[in-house]
Length: 516
Ligand code: XMP
Image 1 (cartoon, rainbow, N blue to C red):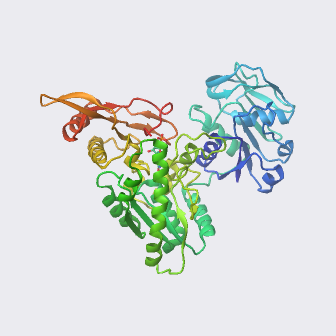
Image 2: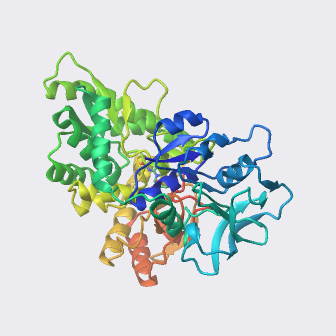
Image 3: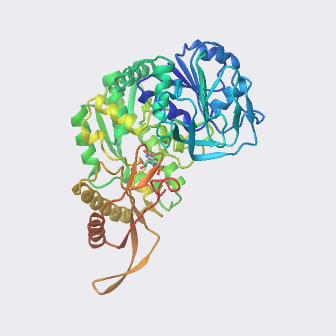
């Protein structure tokens, strides 16, 4: 494999993902792994990731110079580049001019790692410390105002480093650099794709599950459907899917999921109506994180209750369900504070919302992947477009789209407004252009309106159409005005108590996609 050594937070997975995009297999390892163990994995190349530390800080993660003597091609990125330079005796300047964001970068030698590069490149930087002189044996390839050594290489030892982040899209030639490193510098072929990920996961799932019974929490969305299809490929009839109606679904959703999923996959599905239970538990709650925790816990309790039925129907009496499959993706893990050193932005119901006394062991075959990769796998597994290209809908459903307390009446109103927005966006042919369009009810906000010569005092509905590649960042979608106008007119005419429709024009960051 190519090993990506993780020096912290969100970027390491992004690098692993870019390596997969170059059709090369990669694995992530923590920086605390001893060099001997790293080398024992027989890596074909190593990438040292960026990270939040500064090489001079006490306790900053260091790289053992032994790593550079093994003859394995190494690429250091940002912090990984500085740690490499430092370990090999370079002069690292603490008082350098910091560079954050887009940076004009002068290419001094368009060779090796930078072969074919134009004389100047825009790169995305984030550093406050700079490498002043390259270590002995290295050639300086590029510089910027704040970084005298912005890229370097020693082709004899196959060691390479860049101060910038080639893994982010803001570095236009970043993917090219990663591919040059993998294919030219390290001489690796391109043979890793969706079908290899499937083979690899099927093997891992079989190893983990053995002959035990497995249930999958199925929402009908792309993540849980692909996870279910993968597990089904691995262990067949040992899998039963459980679809929970928590009372927070969209209009017509329960029927549609039950029908589409079973038709497309033939996987056993049990549907449970737990809406009373969920809505009772949510009574009087308006704080978003509490809602998320309650919903996360209720899901698990519902799966526990469904266990008996699953066992009976599988004719496996005496056995119990040991595993729970979830379609958790990497962004869910990071935002729930699951990345190494990452902050908790919100508790995604299937990660941060899990109860502590969880009795199931989790099977999460998509945990290191991003949504567009999961879609590619879904297609490869033969799932229909209706499932693979379904827009994301959060597990906690409409529960996190009512700002304020959740009541049946409010759900009714929101469900109607959401159905109208979806219908009109589909009619306008915008389903693939927008990532998703949350429709949010600001239940505790009231404003004055006039309808049929009467004064009204109703609540606003927010439309939140966004475009995104992987939900980590997003921009508000420029939906045509006439489509917005139709949605607005229909919602105010057809939804009781709604006298205003507003458009959310904020990107992520600083906002998130959902309001809670
Ligand atoms: P945010 O609001 O964090 O949303 O910008 C990013 C993406 O994740 C979805 N989302 C969730 N999905 N369980 C899920 O399955 C959750 O708890 C959850 N919270 C947010 C959201 O719809 C968007 O696509």
